[in-house]
Amino acid sequence: MIYKGYEAVIGLEVHCELSTASKIFCSCSTAYGGEANSHTCPVCTGMPGALPTLNRKVVEYAITAGLALNCTVNKSSGHDRKNYFYPDLPKGYQISQYDIPLLYDGHLNITDEDGQLLNIGIERIHIEEDAGKLIHRDGETLIDFNRAGVPLIEIVSRPCMHTAEEVKSYLRKLRTILVSTGVSDCKMNEGSMRADINVSVREVGDTSFTTRTEIKNLNSINHAGRAVEYEFKRQVDTILAGGEIVRETRRYDENSGKTFSMRSKEGQRDYRFFADPDLPRLTVSDELICSLAATLPELPDAKIARYCSEYSLSQDDAELIAESPAASEYYNTAVTLTQNKKTLTNLFIGEILPKLGENEPIVSPSHLAEITDLLSAGEINNGTAKLLISRCTAEDGMSPAEIVTRDNLGMIRDKEKIRELLDTAVKELPKAVSDYKNGKKAAIKSIIGRAMAISKGRADPVILNDEAEKIL
Image (cartoon, rainbow, N blue to C red; front, side):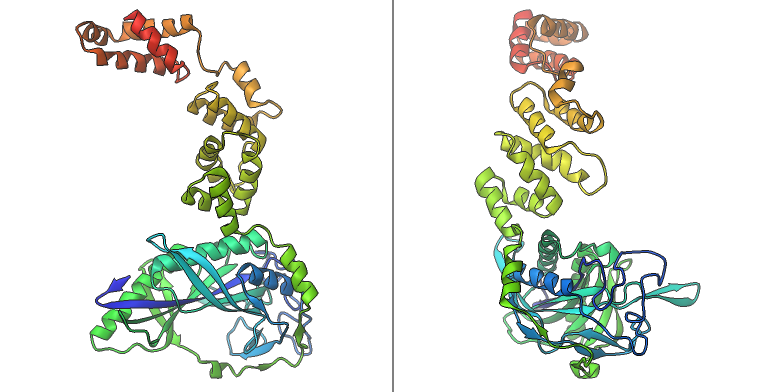
């Protein structure tokens, strides 16, 4: 991503809500939605005298995420108050971690536009509480505190990305890893994963870091990419016009595709961090770290490598399946039930994957494997395979083979029936017959194609070809 001799330098701060049942410092529900201010108590609304109690599951989920991202665990860390005023932050401060995060020095790998492997460094992961939500309507601003106190991890990358595509790949990979570990659902449309993007520019060949701006609260991977592209060019054009880049927080407007200034960027000193006096030091044992490491599932990189080596999948197909835990679980079951793994993969990607996660009934993995075997054996054609995939979800108790027999969906191999199909085709296409008899041998393709169409693709192509030549 080079523009007028400049390149971008990009780092991300990604906030992910953890999938705990209760909030980080109280027992209120973390369920999304619900009547405004119904998931609240004196602790998460910051009432005087209310004291926080750390949710152990938050620490376990955060460490699990960190281990999946190759981080080191700080066995002793603390909680700090980040002081700033905002209407949906009722205490006037946010409980976070400042100088000693729970996790640090991790990385994940992505591929760039040229297919090259890139190692993206993760500087730190710390736990903190979410703020509430402002609702603007009819000239009023209302506050819903249901989200206040929902546990977050903030994942801070190093400034080592340079293109919008790298940013999008990083976010996709990060989301896949977090969802696969079960620590977060990462539903960006519900705000459970959102990104702050820091962008600066420098001349190509320069290695120094220049003034950066922060684009706040991106809740879409595509929007993140477009915001980076716009902000990069805006900064370059500003510099070349003699202007100066100021450190500020900006927002992205999806309708115009532009970023706009919100406020000057706060520095660390502005937040007046100090250790929270209501919470003790957070100590993590080796036993806990080892037990959480032992529960890690097969992570996306390992899964992709296995799919490529064991099932001869392409890199793109393997990444597509590994991206969703639900897709991986389904595929892992189905692919072990057939020897025709490539055929099953094609059916899965084309017919099953688009329906996963949409609350639509889908064919079971065992039935998909049976349909695959029928197709591979030539008992049915592709159209019938797709028909069976939809029928087997609606007709409980019947196997694909039973439906094929009952509805006469199998391939037609009876020579008399195939001759009947050809007789009909010959009557409908007299010119093709005349052309064939006058030496235009390619005309037979029209006859065969018409007979195949009449059979709805079920005529055995080898027998059909042989019988067509005999008839003509």
